[in-house]
Length: 424
Picture 1: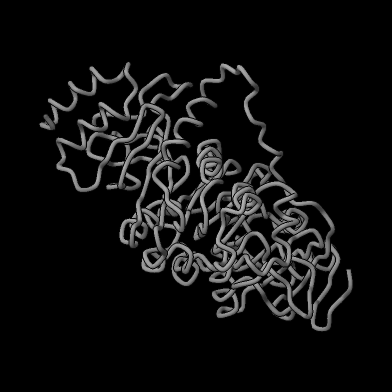
Picture 2 (picture 1 turned 90 degrees about the vertical axis):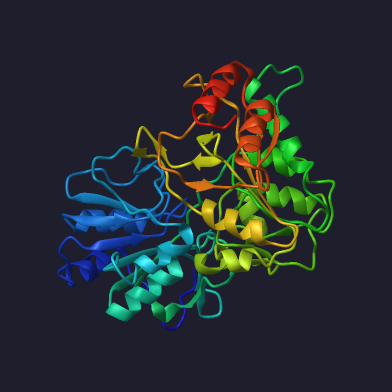
């Protein structure tokens, strides 16, 4: 890796000395989240500081779990889930950046960047809430460190920074975590989960027209939806994140080549990362832009597809908590439901299986027993069918959820619940 003028390239020992020189006492350490954790940099910090608070969004497994380390987040990932040291701050994703200038001010930033390119580095696949963290850190003189990785894709947009922004740079050469290619079900497969995902995907895809703008997540159901979109034309992407499904749409010629692909982070296969690198069709923007309901509402045919743990007969969705304990968080679901609902020709779809196979319970319930994450989607789609929600009175909404979205095994009880709740 070639050194650039202004880049303070340091080794692990020098990074440790820099941290020690700050005399930090239980500092708040904001780290690139999702699948972009700067592991080598984090390991140096963990070996140097006896105690600290690590603030990361949707952190994967592998974070230090020891006395002295506290977790902070507004979206809980597998690496923090279930920890007794977790401090959860509820916030819609579009609002999380505001926390860095108020109640969650950073003392140290650990960022995962690309290698330098013409005196700049890029935050690559993880822009997200980090520009706000950088601005807050600069304002208060916090320590800003980068792990510059020759394998991190260079992306254009809000994540490009001059190398002199960083107080120290640890240069590495390591592959990013990558998803293995998702295998299609074998012929004659009896995988009920795969079948239900395909059915949901086909139903959602049938509602989408040429020229629509898509927001999709990652997983079996989003993948199944995208499979059904490959025959469409001139699609756009405005999403907080994207994965290999967008690559598949591009290969199928379904994307409008004149429209930029807008997102704030990405996670997928190595093939996706290779495609993203220096691709000027992709613009990675800060969360305040991608998740701004007003900007989402400006996208033609904006179609938001989200999921939930439960949806009740009032059209309320719980996507965050199990047994009142935080499982994930608000994320961008509310941002996109509101934005898509206001877009010209837009729709906000909740897509989920009608039956939870592990818990053996219906995902459509009478009334939520958990806090509500979002409400009032355009429609709810399960493998059973489509329940239209927006524009119908509450009794009709409940009836359609029972008749068209709920599992047959749950319908008798749901009709009882509807009567009890005055929805018949």
